[in-house]
Length: 209
Image (spheres, rainbow, N blue to C red):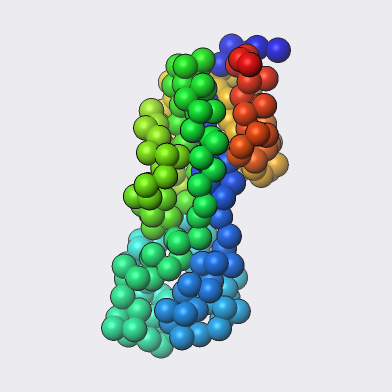
């Protein structure tokens, strides 16, 4: 059934682009001269990546912490190379480009609502993929609003930026807890991956062929 939707938010990871943290770990391990297990431990299992994505620390602090933990200097771990290493793990879901375009035509405005860090966002946006060139009306990134889904603060920021009633927002995300948090605020929200799943959801809410 066609719903009265005036704004559509898309998650980034696994909706607009797919990603594999194990690739990031291997990239960083090669750069730092450590094992992939050690890389995973210091980046992900330590909570460092979450602190980076939540805006608690900057790119500089993120890199410096890795140097201190691994006892390596800036010559061994240049910041730009560190940030590229942890970011070069994404693959475009270019079939989402017409989905986003259809959502914009049907609803009026679209945005991205993502738990991500500055390095990942910049890396994705500088790629020559069609999906990386989408011009969003609004972007809500956890690192910028200092709140990560499913925390309420990030949804509040998204509502203010959308400037429509919560029940006029449609949100597509791959994680059930993020979808549930949005639904509790009165949003229309669906869990799915990018590609055909997202296309079917968007058309179900907005109509289309």
